[in-house]
Image 1 (cartoon, rainbow, N blue to C red):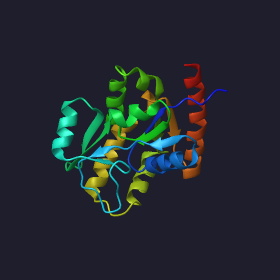
Image 2: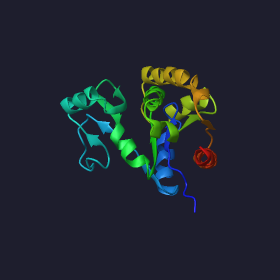
Image 3: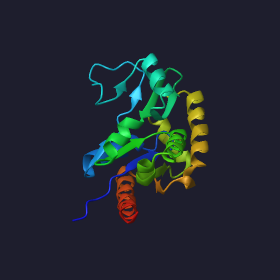
Image 4: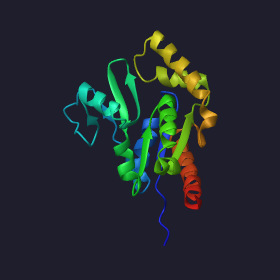
Length: 200
């Protein structure tokens, strides 16, 4: 009996394309998937549990783990708090569980670089880029997400242009349509990825 191989599935793409929704659906609807629990220096909210929602670290703890080389990737978010992916959060589970996460294009580059010296990660890394149908549609989606200042909207659109330039470096590109179409595309690509992982 052959068991389906595990993978670290990374979803990337501009803000507003629905990566978080896709991640949630993968965890709830695709067998043997869990979300990567990332680390953060932001304070935890009342309903959050350390180790389930995030690994909550103080600034000093984050610095110590960074110095020890324990992160696959990390970044400042809104210049206030740091977020990152611990090697242990991925490698300790990847042998028996598939993991999914959504991070920015820069984070994907960092994980790819780390994978060069981590054979397990290199063998199991699957990347998908979620691309908007057009920049105009992306602008409408971002405007529809609530109060976004004109300055913030332009900043996000500029970031999206830079991220879109990277899309052809990904294993698969999901050309975003409806939420249902995006999830069907993800499932089809995941089936292809599994076949590749099985043949090595």
